[in-house]
Length: 378
Image 1 (tube, rainbow, N blue to C red):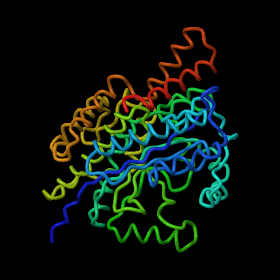
Image 2: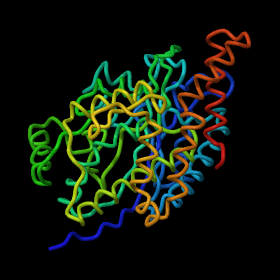
Image 3: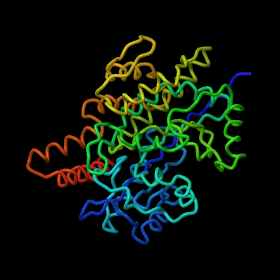
Image 4: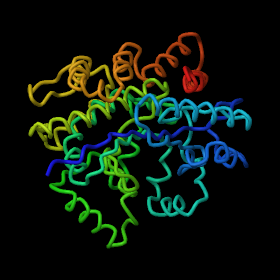
Protein backbone atom coordinates (compact mmCIF):
# COMPACT_ATOMS: atom_id res chain seq x y z
CA UNK A 1 0.00 0.00 0.00
CA UNK A 2 1.53 3.41 -0.95
CA UNK A 3 2.49 5.92 1.71
CA UNK A 4 -0.02 8.53 2.71
CA UNK A 5 1.23 11.71 1.04
CA UNK A 6 2.64 14.03 3.74
CA UNK A 7 1.45 17.61 3.87
CA UNK A 8 4.91 18.98 4.78
CA UNK A 9 3.41 21.66 7.02
CA UNK A 10 5.96 23.77 8.83
CA UNK A 11 6.32 25.33 12.26
CA UNK A 12 9.22 27.27 13.74
CA UNK A 13 10.30 27.85 17.34
CA UNK A 14 12.80 30.55 18.30
CA UNK A 15 14.39 31.34 21.67
CA UNK A 16 15.49 34.90 22.50
CA UNK A 17 17.47 36.64 25.22
CA UNK A 18 16.37 39.72 27.19
CA UNK A 19 18.92 42.49 27.82
CA UNK A 20 18.73 45.76 29.71
CA UNK A 21 18.48 48.78 27.44
CA UNK A 22 20.79 50.89 29.60
CA UNK A 23 23.69 48.54 30.41
CA UNK A 24 23.10 45.92 27.67
CA UNK A 25 23.61 43.26 30.35
CA UNK A 26 21.52 40.13 30.26
CA UNK A 27 18.60 40.46 32.67
CA UNK A 28 18.96 38.08 35.61
CA UNK A 29 15.34 38.19 36.73
CA UNK A 30 12.48 38.93 34.35
CA UNK A 31 10.43 41.97 35.41
CA UNK A 32 7.09 41.27 37.03
CA UNK A 33 4.33 41.36 34.47
CA UNK A 34 6.43 40.94 31.34
CA UNK A 35 5.57 37.32 30.71
CA UNK A 36 1.93 37.85 31.67
CA UNK A 37 1.64 40.69 29.16
CA UNK A 38 3.33 38.60 26.47
CA UNK A 39 0.98 35.69 27.10
CA UNK A 40 -2.05 37.97 26.89
CA UNK A 41 -1.01 39.45 23.56
CA UNK A 42 0.49 36.31 22.03
CA UNK A 43 -1.68 33.61 23.56
CA UNK A 44 -0.48 30.14 22.68
CA UNK A 45 2.63 31.38 20.88
CA UNK A 46 4.96 32.43 23.69
CA UNK A 47 6.32 30.72 26.78
CA UNK A 48 9.06 31.14 29.39
CA UNK A 49 12.25 29.15 29.04
CA UNK A 50 14.67 27.43 31.42
CA UNK A 51 16.24 30.72 32.54
CA UNK A 52 14.37 33.93 33.32
CA UNK A 53 16.46 35.84 30.76
CA UNK A 54 15.05 33.64 27.97
CA UNK A 55 11.74 33.66 26.16
CA UNK A 56 10.46 31.29 23.47
CA UNK A 57 7.99 31.74 20.65
CA UNK A 58 6.40 29.26 18.28
CA UNK A 59 4.38 29.73 15.12
CA UNK A 60 1.13 28.07 14.24
CA UNK A 61 1.10 25.08 11.93
CA UNK A 62 1.80 26.82 8.61
CA UNK A 63 1.39 25.68 5.02
CA UNK A 64 4.37 27.65 3.72
CA UNK A 65 7.60 29.19 4.95
CA UNK A 66 6.22 32.58 3.93
CA UNK A 67 3.34 32.16 6.37
CA UNK A 68 5.72 31.11 9.14
CA UNK A 69 8.02 34.07 8.47
CA UNK A 70 5.08 36.49 8.68
CA UNK A 71 4.07 35.02 12.05
CA UNK A 72 7.62 35.24 13.38
CA UNK A 73 7.83 38.86 12.27
CA UNK A 74 4.71 39.62 14.33
CA UNK A 75 6.03 37.64 17.31
CA UNK A 76 9.42 39.36 17.28
CA UNK A 77 7.93 42.83 16.85
CA UNK A 78 5.38 42.33 19.63
CA UNK A 79 7.93 40.93 22.08
CA UNK A 80 10.39 43.71 21.28
CA UNK A 81 7.71 46.29 22.04
CA UNK A 82 6.70 44.60 25.30
CA UNK A 83 10.33 44.28 26.35
CA UNK A 84 10.91 47.98 25.66
CA UNK A 85 7.98 48.88 27.90
CA UNK A 86 9.90 47.14 30.70
CA UNK A 87 13.23 48.80 29.90
CA UNK A 88 14.54 45.76 28.04
CA UNK A 89 15.49 44.76 24.50
CA UNK A 90 15.23 41.49 22.62
CA UNK A 91 18.16 39.75 20.93
CA UNK A 92 18.03 36.72 18.66
CA UNK A 93 21.42 35.12 19.24
CA UNK A 94 22.43 31.79 20.72
CA UNK A 95 24.75 33.35 23.31
CA UNK A 96 25.14 36.77 24.90
CA UNK A 97 28.63 38.20 24.24
CA UNK A 98 29.63 38.80 27.87
CA UNK A 99 26.97 37.46 30.26
CA UNK A 100 28.02 35.36 33.25
CA UNK A 101 25.97 32.15 33.31
CA UNK A 102 26.52 31.70 37.06
CA UNK A 103 24.43 34.80 37.80
CA UNK A 104 21.31 33.68 35.93
CA UNK A 105 18.14 32.54 37.68
CA UNK A 106 15.92 29.62 36.79
CA UNK A 107 12.29 30.08 35.83
CA UNK A 108 10.11 29.13 38.81
CA UNK A 109 8.14 26.34 37.17
CA UNK A 110 8.10 22.69 38.28
CA UNK A 111 9.42 21.41 34.93
CA UNK A 112 12.41 23.74 34.98
CA UNK A 113 13.14 23.29 38.67
CA UNK A 114 13.17 19.52 38.15
CA UNK A 115 15.51 19.96 35.18
CA UNK A 116 17.83 22.09 37.31
CA UNK A 117 17.89 19.40 40.00
CA UNK A 118 18.53 16.67 37.47
CA UNK A 119 21.19 18.42 35.38
CA UNK A 120 23.06 20.21 38.18
CA UNK A 121 26.20 22.03 36.99
CA UNK A 122 25.75 21.36 33.29
CA UNK A 123 22.20 22.69 33.54
CA UNK A 124 23.31 25.94 35.16
CA UNK A 125 25.47 26.66 32.11
CA UNK A 126 22.53 26.49 29.66
CA UNK A 127 22.66 30.17 28.79
CA UNK A 128 22.02 29.34 25.13
CA UNK A 129 19.20 29.71 22.62
CA UNK A 130 18.27 27.71 19.55
CA UNK A 131 15.89 27.54 16.62
CA UNK A 132 13.77 24.46 15.88
CA UNK A 133 12.01 23.69 12.59
CA UNK A 134 9.12 21.21 12.48
CA UNK A 135 7.98 19.57 9.24
CA UNK A 136 4.76 17.58 9.25
CA UNK A 137 4.98 13.91 8.25
CA UNK A 138 2.05 11.94 9.64
CA UNK A 139 2.80 8.24 8.94
CA UNK A 140 5.10 7.00 11.69
CA UNK A 141 7.24 4.63 9.63
CA UNK A 142 7.68 7.19 6.89
CA UNK A 143 8.73 9.74 9.50
CA UNK A 144 11.40 7.48 10.99
CA UNK A 145 12.70 6.56 7.52
CA UNK A 146 13.20 10.21 6.56
CA UNK A 147 14.59 10.90 10.05
CA UNK A 148 17.38 8.39 9.40
CA UNK A 149 18.33 10.03 6.11
CA UNK A 150 17.97 13.69 7.10
CA UNK A 151 20.76 13.42 9.67
CA UNK A 152 23.29 13.66 6.83
CA UNK A 153 22.31 17.28 6.19
CA UNK A 154 22.35 18.57 9.77
CA UNK A 155 25.89 20.04 9.56
CA UNK A 156 24.93 21.89 6.38
CA UNK A 157 22.03 23.52 8.23
CA UNK A 158 24.12 24.38 11.28
CA UNK A 159 26.71 26.21 9.19
CA UNK A 160 24.06 28.63 7.88
CA UNK A 161 22.71 29.47 11.33
CA UNK A 162 25.76 30.14 13.52
CA UNK A 163 25.28 32.99 16.01
CA UNK A 164 27.32 32.09 19.11
CA UNK A 165 31.01 32.97 18.75
CA UNK A 166 31.31 34.66 22.17
CA UNK A 167 31.06 33.19 25.67
CA UNK A 168 31.51 35.18 28.88
CA UNK A 169 33.39 37.97 27.13
CA UNK A 170 35.68 35.78 25.03
CA UNK A 171 35.73 34.89 21.37
CA UNK A 172 35.83 31.10 21.63
CA UNK A 173 37.10 30.59 18.08
CA UNK A 174 33.96 28.66 17.10
CA UNK A 175 31.05 29.99 15.10
CA UNK A 176 28.62 27.96 17.23
CA UNK A 177 29.88 27.71 20.79
CA UNK A 178 26.28 26.95 21.79
CA UNK A 179 26.67 23.32 20.75
CA UNK A 180 29.71 22.91 22.99
CA UNK A 181 27.56 23.92 25.95
CA UNK A 182 24.54 21.88 24.89
CA UNK A 183 26.55 18.72 24.22
CA UNK A 184 27.35 18.39 27.92
CA UNK A 185 23.74 17.32 28.49
CA UNK A 186 22.60 13.73 28.17
CA UNK A 187 20.62 12.63 25.10
CA UNK A 188 22.06 15.32 22.82
CA UNK A 189 24.11 15.35 19.62
CA UNK A 190 23.46 13.48 16.41
CA UNK A 191 20.60 10.98 16.68
CA UNK A 192 21.03 7.22 16.40
CA UNK A 193 19.54 5.23 13.53
CA UNK A 194 16.38 3.13 13.94
CA UNK A 195 15.14 0.39 11.64
CA UNK A 196 11.48 1.16 12.34
CA UNK A 197 9.12 3.39 14.29
CA UNK A 198 8.56 0.51 16.68
CA UNK A 199 12.27 0.25 17.44
CA UNK A 200 12.40 3.97 18.18
CA UNK A 201 9.38 3.73 20.48
CA UNK A 202 10.85 0.78 22.35
CA UNK A 203 14.09 2.68 22.93
CA UNK A 204 12.24 5.66 24.39
CA UNK A 205 10.07 3.38 26.53
CA UNK A 206 13.15 1.85 28.15
CA UNK A 207 14.05 5.26 29.59
CA UNK A 208 10.44 6.13 30.46
CA UNK A 209 9.76 2.81 32.18
CA UNK A 210 13.02 3.10 34.11
CA UNK A 211 11.90 6.48 35.44
CA UNK A 212 14.80 8.31 33.79
CA UNK A 213 12.60 10.59 31.64
CA UNK A 214 8.87 11.31 31.60
CA UNK A 215 8.53 11.29 27.82
CA UNK A 216 10.28 12.00 24.54
CA UNK A 217 10.47 15.75 25.18
CA UNK A 218 13.52 15.02 27.34
CA UNK A 219 15.39 13.68 24.31
CA UNK A 220 17.36 16.59 22.87
CA UNK A 221 19.05 15.20 19.78
CA UNK A 222 19.92 17.51 16.87
CA UNK A 223 16.97 15.93 15.08
CA UNK A 224 14.10 14.04 16.66
CA UNK A 225 10.55 12.88 16.00
CA UNK A 226 8.58 15.42 17.97
CA UNK A 227 6.97 14.04 21.13
CA UNK A 228 4.08 16.51 20.77
CA UNK A 229 3.33 16.62 17.04
CA UNK A 230 3.51 14.30 14.01
CA UNK A 231 6.60 16.14 12.81
CA UNK A 232 10.32 15.84 12.38
CA UNK A 233 11.96 18.50 14.55
CA UNK A 234 15.33 19.84 13.43
CA UNK A 235 17.09 21.20 16.52
CA UNK A 236 20.74 21.63 15.54
CA UNK A 237 20.54 25.27 14.48
CA UNK A 238 21.57 28.37 16.38
CA UNK A 239 18.84 31.00 16.46
CA UNK A 240 19.34 33.40 13.53
CA UNK A 241 19.58 37.11 14.26
CA UNK A 242 18.10 38.13 10.89
CA UNK A 243 14.62 36.81 10.22
CA UNK A 244 15.30 36.23 6.52
CA UNK A 245 18.09 33.83 7.53
CA UNK A 246 15.61 31.90 9.67
CA UNK A 247 13.25 31.63 6.70
CA UNK A 248 16.05 30.45 4.40
CA UNK A 249 17.00 27.62 6.75
CA UNK A 250 13.37 26.66 7.28
CA UNK A 251 12.94 26.50 3.50
CA UNK A 252 16.00 24.27 3.22
CA UNK A 253 14.69 21.91 5.93
CA UNK A 254 11.22 21.68 4.40
CA UNK A 255 12.63 21.15 0.90
CA UNK A 256 15.09 18.49 2.04
CA UNK A 257 12.32 16.54 3.73
CA UNK A 258 10.22 16.63 0.58
CA UNK A 259 13.23 15.64 -1.54
CA UNK A 260 13.86 12.57 0.60
CA UNK A 261 10.19 11.64 0.34
CA UNK A 262 10.39 12.08 -3.43
CA UNK A 263 13.36 9.72 -3.57
CA UNK A 264 11.41 7.15 -1.59
CA UNK A 265 8.47 7.37 -3.98
CA UNK A 266 10.93 6.58 -6.78
CA UNK A 267 12.31 3.57 -4.87
CA UNK A 268 15.50 5.48 -4.07
CA UNK A 269 17.01 6.80 -0.88
CA UNK A 270 19.88 8.89 0.43
CA UNK A 271 22.80 6.75 1.43
CA UNK A 272 23.29 6.37 5.18
CA UNK A 273 26.71 7.25 6.57
CA UNK A 274 28.14 6.37 9.93
CA UNK A 275 27.47 8.83 12.72
CA UNK A 276 31.25 9.05 13.22
CA UNK A 277 31.61 10.59 9.75
CA UNK A 278 28.66 12.97 10.00
CA UNK A 279 29.93 14.09 13.40
CA UNK A 280 33.14 15.27 11.73
CA UNK A 281 31.11 17.53 9.46
CA UNK A 282 29.12 18.70 12.46
CA UNK A 283 32.36 19.81 14.11
CA UNK A 284 33.54 21.54 10.94
CA UNK A 285 30.27 23.46 10.66
CA UNK A 286 30.44 24.39 14.34
CA UNK A 287 34.03 25.58 14.01
CA UNK A 288 34.08 27.31 10.62
CA UNK A 289 30.46 28.08 9.72
CA UNK A 290 29.98 28.87 6.02
CA UNK A 291 33.62 29.77 5.45
CA UNK A 292 35.12 26.31 5.74
CA UNK A 293 34.53 23.01 4.02
CA UNK A 294 32.55 19.87 4.74
CA UNK A 295 33.38 16.37 3.63
CA UNK A 296 31.47 15.09 0.62
CA UNK A 297 31.48 11.41 1.50
CA UNK A 298 30.50 10.33 -1.99
CA UNK A 299 33.51 12.13 -3.46
CA UNK A 300 35.72 11.33 -0.52
CA UNK A 301 37.06 14.86 -0.15
CA UNK A 302 36.49 18.10 1.70
CA UNK A 303 34.54 20.57 -0.44
CA UNK A 304 34.08 24.30 0.10
CA UNK A 305 30.76 25.01 1.78
CA UNK A 306 29.78 27.49 -0.93
CA UNK A 307 29.98 24.72 -3.53
CA UNK A 308 28.02 22.29 -1.38
CA UNK A 309 25.28 24.86 -0.76
CA UNK A 310 24.88 25.49 -4.48
CA UNK A 311 24.58 21.74 -5.04
CA UNK A 312 21.99 21.46 -2.27
CA UNK A 313 19.91 24.28 -3.67
CA UNK A 314 19.86 22.60 -7.06
CA UNK A 315 19.08 19.23 -5.49
CA UNK A 316 15.90 20.54 -3.87
CA UNK A 317 14.93 23.07 -6.55
CA UNK A 318 11.77 21.27 -7.67
CA UNK A 319 10.77 20.65 -4.05
CA UNK A 320 11.13 24.34 -3.18
CA UNK A 321 8.95 25.18 -6.18
CA UNK A 322 6.29 22.72 -5.05
CA UNK A 323 6.39 24.11 -1.51
CA UNK A 324 6.34 27.76 -2.63
CA UNK A 325 9.61 28.61 -0.88
CA UNK A 326 11.93 29.22 -3.84
CA UNK A 327 12.58 32.82 -2.84
CA UNK A 328 13.38 31.94 0.77
CA UNK A 329 15.67 29.09 -0.30
CA UNK A 330 17.56 31.39 -2.66
CA UNK A 331 18.32 33.69 0.29
CA UNK A 332 20.76 31.09 1.63
CA UNK A 333 23.27 32.38 -0.92
CA UNK A 334 22.89 35.83 0.65
CA UNK A 335 23.97 34.35 3.99
CA UNK A 336 27.22 33.32 2.32
CA UNK A 337 27.75 36.82 0.94
CA UNK A 338 27.30 38.79 4.15
CA UNK A 339 28.15 36.05 6.64
CA UNK A 340 26.17 34.56 9.46
CA UNK A 341 25.38 36.38 12.69
CA UNK A 342 28.62 35.00 14.15
CA UNK A 343 30.60 36.65 11.34
CA UNK A 344 28.85 39.99 11.77
CA UNK A 345 29.29 39.89 15.54
CA UNK A 346 33.03 39.40 15.14
CA UNK A 347 33.17 42.21 12.59
CA UNK A 348 31.34 44.58 14.95
CA UNK A 349 33.68 43.67 17.79
CA UNK A 350 36.79 44.10 15.65
CA UNK A 351 35.67 47.45 14.29
CA UNK A 352 34.96 48.76 17.79
CA UNK A 353 38.40 47.66 18.96
CA UNK A 354 40.04 49.35 15.99
CA UNK A 355 38.24 52.57 16.94
CA UNK A 356 39.71 52.46 20.44
CA UNK A 357 37.04 50.68 22.48
CA UNK A 358 38.19 48.39 25.26
CA UNK A 359 37.12 44.73 25.27
CA UNK A 360 33.94 45.27 27.28
CA UNK A 361 32.77 48.24 25.27
CA UNK A 362 33.46 46.34 22.06
CA UNK A 363 31.31 43.48 23.36
CA UNK A 364 28.57 46.00 24.16
CA UNK A 365 28.74 47.13 20.53
CA UNK A 366 28.02 43.53 19.54
CA UNK A 367 24.86 43.61 21.67
CA UNK A 368 23.77 46.85 19.99
CA UNK A 369 24.17 45.14 16.62
CA UNK A 370 22.09 42.18 17.78
CA UNK A 371 19.30 44.43 19.07
CA UNK A 372 19.10 46.23 15.73
CA UNK A 373 19.21 43.12 13.57
CA UNK A 374 16.66 41.19 15.64
CA UNK A 375 13.92 43.58 14.56
CA UNK A 376 15.35 44.43 11.14
CA UNK A 377 13.15 43.84 8.08
CA UNK A 378 10.14 42.72 10.10
